[in-house]
Length: 421
Image (tube, rainbow, N blue to C red):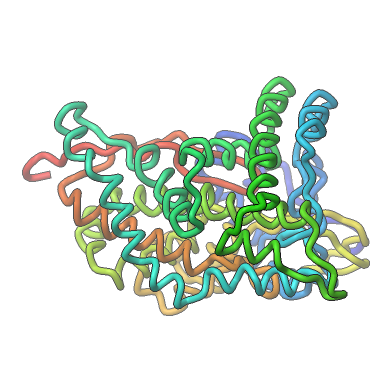
């Protein structure tokens, strides 16, 4: 059908689709199914984005960075008001193309540099550190369960574990983990949420602080090992040194992905595991824990969508889309595409194609920290299941983080199971 979307009737499951609405955030799966069946390429007037829902189309887009540009990947979803822009300007904030939003020649070298610090060897060597940090965070869980009758695996465990691991891996000591997480979470809400103008100004203040701290890390004259030191020494394809704003932009992406996004994955992994007593009992096994993480990544990944811009007129699923159109790739929806994953509603860690999901992207922009995130989540699950074997979920209907591209339970409150339950 030329020049538009496949029509959707008033009675369709889409209804008045609100990508930020409580109903969609709580249960987006009927919408994904409706889109894939009836409107695989659908223009959402509220956001100005073309929603792409089928696995085949999304994979094609991700594997063609020349035809589908990453330029809008980190643009603010909600227009920033002048007061918020002033706050960011005073902090010297900028996000030039670095990793997720970089389609130029410099991307290859930068991605290779970052990937080297999350190699299989480095991740394997970090497992004892992840285990130690996880056990430290869980030290007070039994005590809190006894004293308060409940424990929040999201706020007190999942939210902090990846931040502390990253700080130890990068040798960062001069800032509190809670502060780093607050900065990272603020950036996600500011750029991917729908906050009101007053909230945007407050978030801009936190994001400005984060950016200034990262700039200080990059420009600090002291010798620093690891990723930040390597960024200082990196050379662009023409031989010139990497400029400070681009180095900071690379750190901005890595720190957020390594903290907030991984913490969101861990929270969802723990919640789904606790919701299934048989899975929780088996999660002490490392192989099971790793496969469970991949099934959660398929069905409920923390990064639910990603954006692209068409470089030229194109066609997807029979729908013509003009050059310059902004696309929203429904990564979470692709994991429930029945043409690729039979019975997608079932969490089945023995699924033959369990790692075929697109939750880390694909191609040249695939997440360079995918192995670390997967390993941290599996270790977090295995450690919690071992330390807290007799727990169950307290809340059946959790409060969910619902940003355009990020989704996870804000709480995973658990209580002790009663005998016989």
